[in-house]
Structure formats: C-alpha cells, structure tokens
Amino acid sequence: MIRYSISDTMPLFGMPFSSEGVNRLPECLRDRVSGNLWECAASQSGARLCFMSDTTLFGLSGTFPDALGTHNMHVRGRAGLDVYIDGGYAGAFFPTAPGHAESVIIERLPRALRRYTVYLPIYGRVDSLRVLLDDDAALLPPPPFARALPAVFYGTSITQGGCASHPALSYPAWLCRDLNLDFVNLGFSGLGRGERVVAEQVAGIPASCYVLDFVQNNPTIEEFEEAYYRFYHILRDKNPDTPVVMTAAIPYAGEGLSQEFIVKQTARRRIAHDAYERGLAGGDKNLHMMDWYQALDFGRGDAQVDGAHPNDYGFFLMKEALKPLLKQILSL
Image (tube, rainbow, N blue to C red; front, top):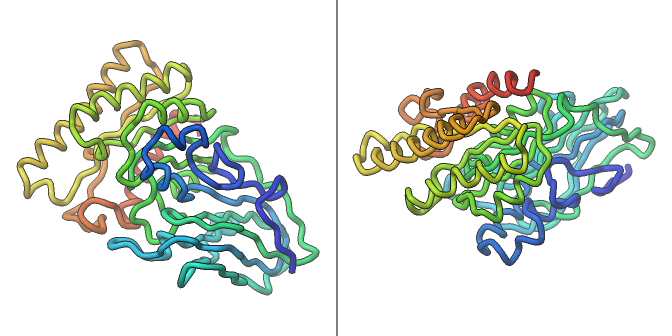
C-alpha cells in the first residue's frame, strides 16, 4: 500500500488561493477581514481530490484538528469526507474524535481504471491528507470537466453546505457533479456579507460563471442593499462577459409566524430583484436571476433542518431548480 499526499500529482480542486487547502481566502486578506471570517474560510467546503486509478484498494489518512459537534449538523456532514467512484457514492471517512485517523474504505475491487472524487469537510478541515492505494496502482489526472473554468459560488452557510448530511450533498457539490463542472465554494456561515475586499478577490478567480447567493448575513437591510449591488458591480467590472447568477432568499419555515420577519425577508428579496433589474437596465445581457422563494417548495419546513438550513431533500430541490439555468447559460 502506498500513500499519496496532496501535490502536483495529487492536486486539490476547488481551492483557488491555496493548492494545499490551507484557506478558502488568500493570505493577503488575513488582516483585512474579521478573525471569524478568516477562521470560517479555513474550513474546506468544496475542496476535492479528483483523479483516475485502477487500484483495488482505497483508503484515506489525515488529521482532524477541530471540535466535531454542532447543534444542527451531524459530524459526518460537518467534518467527514465523501468518496465517490465514477460519480456514485462509495464510502465515507470521518473522525470520531479530533486527532489522526486512517481507514481503508474499499478493498478487493476488480482491477479497472475508475474516476475518484474525494470531497473534503463542509465545516471542519483535514490536515496532512493522504490517499492510500495499491503499490502498483496507476494514478492519472481526472477526465476533463464540461467547462475548463469552475463555477464560483459566493454566499452564506447554505452555500457552504449547512446542513447537508455529508459533504457531497451541498447544493454546489451536488449540482456540479450532475453537470460535470469544477466549482469553488465560497460560502461562509453567518459571514457572507459581501465585503468589498472579498468581492475583489472573488472577481479575480477565472470562472465559467458566478453565483451570488448571499442575502441573510448582513446586520441591516441598508448594509445588504449596498453590498449586494457593489459585489455584482465588482464582478462585472473585472469580468464583463462571464455569466452572473443572482439569487433571492429561500423560503423560511418561520416567515408566516412573524410579521417583522416577513417584512425583512420581503425587503431582502426586493433588493436582490432591484439589483438584477438595475444590471439589465445597464445593458448586461449575461445577468440571470434565481428566485429561490418562487422556485422552491420547502413545504412546511420538511426540506429544512431548523426551518432555515436545508436538509438533503432541500439541497436536492435547490440543485434541481438551478440546474436548467446553468445548463442554459453554459450551453451544456
């Protein structure tokens, strides 16, 4: 059995600012964003190992430094890793406590060349990650994605993947697996506020499209209104021809129980639509809108863990709603 570490021969996808998966934001922002945002960016949602191998044995080894629990998310979704082979679920690697862990996940596979994808944790991180293969196994790059550049998602905890039961079921991961797209997940739990310095870095990532999915995290409606259009403008200024998808807030189970919450949610959705209309009026022919509120039927909270964050069924509905739009704008 041989152990491969992240390297030029085993690259990490979905981490445009660090080939080693250290942080989802670049080092130049360490002292320009809040400590909470920098810490959140150390989680590895969207990071993936992608390769081909004819190994008959497959395992993973790594160190899990973080606390593992949260009030609304299982340890496997928060801190675990998913293994997919030829596009289908094959197994999981997850810690039972912080520290080093190693596991052979699959054994006695018939010898054949297969496509492997390993999804890293949504909220935690794994250090010193290694892949365990047969000593004589081939290790090759993955087949090409449908588009050379990744889809780049910016948003909140929902974009990050809260509260999927395992990492491959965040809606960006699920959607891009269906469409054979590379992707970058820049969802930040509670901290997707569209700061100018963050927008400038996102705009610098070459992308097949950008999806703006932040609506809920700004402390005030006024701050959100300023940040939302500014983020779009920064993207468009640097990427005049790249498709941009705006979104409006998902339905929340508690909206009907609080008039104050209804007013706030209605205002947030209005701001998103106003920004969209403003962009169209400015001549933007590659700007698109996904109104989650109109597109999603979450029932009476059945598609959500806590009335807000989607469960796996909720993320299925999200990726199914967005899929036709991305197929259209990317000509897939």
